[in-house]
Every structure is written in structure tokens, then in C-alpha cells.
Amino acid sequence: MSDIQARGEAATKSSGPRPLDMKLEVVVIPVSDVDRAKRFYGELGFRLDADFVRADGSRAVQLTPSGSPASIQLGAAPLLYLVVSDIEAARAGLIDRGIDVSEVFHRGSALEGRLSGPDPERRSYASFATFSDPDGNAWLIQEVTSRLPGRVDADTTFASSPELASALRRAAAAHGEHEKRIGQHDANWPDWYADYIVREQTGKELPL
Image (cartoon, rainbow, N blue to C red; front, side, top):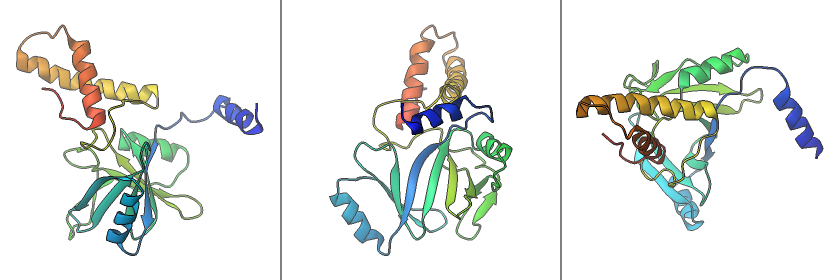
């Protein structure tokens, strides 16, 4: 066993706050010409995930290396994205660790800027919080509960049992509405749950 592996196991076994479920999702790299950079990374074989103008007037261009679970965005300043399934729980967990975290916020129009609190409709990709490390590296926490179409491949994976449990709770709530619509108990609920979870994580239209 290597020294690094031994230290890792010791750290895992040590007592402390419960691990936070956060995924490194995006690295924003500063570029001087977005279109030139977009062409460059396209020629490298990076998949173009998005190219649109946000409500605040900024442009979002995101690309993903083939086979990579993390992506890059082309921007004006470096920034690192961490994705979580519950923004408020993640913020509370960071505060428990003594991290200075911003309030949860969502983006308004170009005139409004940042608005306090999570997105009113709790839409996926729309609620944020920020913090910095001791060297000033900026991190953005983003709540993602349902993937955009084409954002990920068909594989469905979960980083931890709490993340899977969160997906099951969302599926259970949606299935309850499904049973109200059909007016009876759905004996095939395991198949419905599985279909819902896969569709949610891969960005496909959710079942009714």
C-alpha cells in the first residue's frame, strides 16, 4: 500500500463531519476570444454542450472532453463549479466545517443581478452559493436535480447512498402525483421509479 493510500484510508476512518456530496462539474477558463477558443476545443473533439446568452446578458459556452464527467466553460475569469443535489444542505455542511460561504442566491435580469434565496421555482441549475479557498480560488456551488438534454451520456451513476436516496425521494414525490392522475395504485412502481431516475439524470423528458 502506498503512503498516499494509507493516509487516505486513515483520513476516511477518522472522526469528523459527514462527507459532503459534491461533484466537480465545470472549470471556467479565461479566454480573450470566446469564438476562437470554441473552435479550438471543438477541433480537439470536445462536445459542445451549450452556447447561449443568460438572462443577465453574459454568454455561456460549455464544452466537455470525450468521456469526461467534468466540463469547461469559456469565460473572463477562472471559476470552479461544484454540483450538489440540495444547495441549502450543502451550504449548511460547509458552514459546519468553518467555511465562509455566501448566502444562497439566484440570478435575476441584467439589471437585478444576484437575488437572495434559491430560485423561486427551484429549477435545476438555478440556485447558487460561493466560497473561496485561502489562496483566493473561487468556487461556485450549483444545485442540479435534473440534467439538461444531451448534457450527459446514458449511464446513470450516483456518488453516494445519500445522493441515491435524494433521487428516490424525488421519484417518490413524482410517482405520488402519477398515481393521483391515474386514480389507482401503480403496482409497477419499481419500473416507474427506475425510468424516472434514469430520465432525470440523463436529461430526458420525465414520465407522467
